[in-house]
Image (cartoon, rainbow, N blue to C red; front, side, top):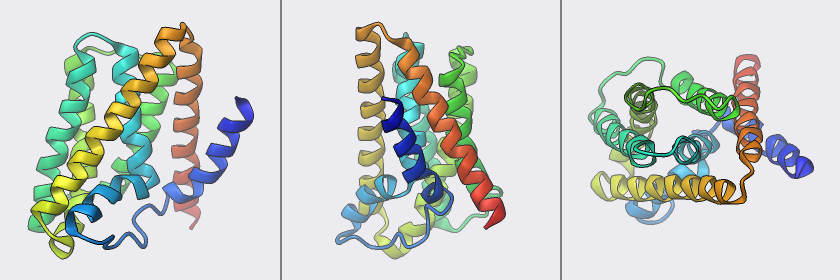
Length: 194
């Protein structure tokens, strides 16, 4: 298990720093939107982490965290699509991987409302990045694709969390959180040095 996690870390860390380089049209606008969260390691990791964090927190968090992310992501997508300026988007996206990974690794359980607000901030930044590409990639069909992909990745994170919970192995989730946070930190260093 440790070797697999280290290999995952080595493969994804450098790419997370450059997640928006070369992401272009992948067929139809809907397919482009669907592909975007899967092709940007920063998006993929943060979105799965929201689901995992929600599952590990339990209760209302299981639906509140993913809904907060998706709702704010849609708002951010429309801001990006409209060309509005939003500062520090890429650092916020990268920070989302680090913060969510750390929250999982250290089993942090903040109030659901507070965590939802922070997750919504992350969703806003992720959506803005998606929305910047929207006009050239097809607008609403593109947005529908990235919303569907995001919801699917949240479900993946929830499923991983539920599986870990059913096995009675919360330490596995904490290790995954540490790997996520480590990938985010390594990507931040790569970006700063690059």
